[in-house]
Amino acid sequence: MRLLARLTDDPWGGISPSVYETGRLVALAPWLAGHDARIRYLLDTQHADGTWGGPGEYALVPTLSAVDALGRHPSARRGLEALRKLLSPPVKLPDTVAVELIVPALAERLGLRTPLDPRLVHALRRRPLPAKLWHTLEIFGPRPEVTAVGGIVAASPAATAVQLQGPVPGASLDYLEAVQDRHGGPVPAGVPVPLFERSWIVVALKSAGLDVPEGVDGQIEAAIGPHGASGGPGLPADADDTATALHALALCDSPGPVEILDRYREARHFACFLDERTPSTSTNAHALQALGHDRELEEWLRDMQEPAGNWRDKWHASPYYATACVTNALQGNEKAVDWVLGTQHDDGSWGRWEGTYEETAYALRILAHSARDVTRAMSRGAKFMHEWGDREHPPLWHDKDLYTPTRIVRAEGAAALHLACAVRR
Image (cartoon, rainbow, N blue to C red; front, side):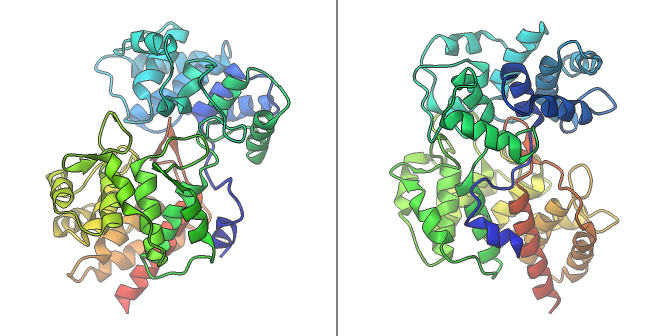
């Protein structure tokens, strides 16, 4: 399987390009190789309604970035009209990374009014920037307190370019040129993130009874520091990456120091980052898996379940992801099974907006925990996944805008299909 062959030897990962991040490079780093290709990418990815990015509120951040980047181009004027509609009250914001800072910062650049006050952005520009905001350095400008790891600022091409301030030879320019070259101009919002990719893939495959390459556990173990693990170079350690890395190591029979999660505990649950804006159900599900048992955490997760039977999360647009994470941690939840059975599409798929390979994989994972006979629903879902073929996977994961970690999605699919086969047997 090519996915596994590249897991240990390709740290760049399979992260899809970002309209938001690409737009920031067009606007702020026109000196970087691939500039014309990035402009073409923005022009080619605009929707018929003038927006960019995902459905509904998920169009706001990428459309702001693309409009600012394209200036007086006719596509920008169409985007500006779309933005006025998106920013008309009541405005709904996605729970994406730093949305409360990105939206007012870019709206102010474009002379647009928003319900978010830009004064917080102004205040942050006048004082040392917390490390967890370095990933969005492009909205603040270069800062003396920001450091690069191997030339990379917080795993962000835009943040790295802003800190570099020009085509200065060195590790940062080498990184930027390599990232843009990988996708022919456009860039992801977070790259490289090897710990994130490896941990999620190992957990997906090993928990379904599938093998992973030798040596990947050593790479994960080496990425855990005194404060835990971070997804990529320059990013701060967080509970989600730490917990998933620890769970991956345990599945590989190489248990790590689970006590390192204590620094993230807040009463009954764990914070992904210190002083976070909203808690994450998937992070806490991963923490429960790493710990093995925690009664208060289990109760907190059950309390977060919605009346319909699903969970939602700040790291993913689809409730099927959050629900799969929690049911995996709780080893099943029949109310969640009822929700999944009741939301299957006519073609056998599942999905928030339309049926997708990824969300169908999560649904199969949820059903695999059920004590009931769910063979027919799982068989229909597996058939849909087999028929997906080589189609692209829609971006559903939260960073500054939506993205797809393609290798993780493929691993989740392989695991789900394996479980579906086991149920049929």
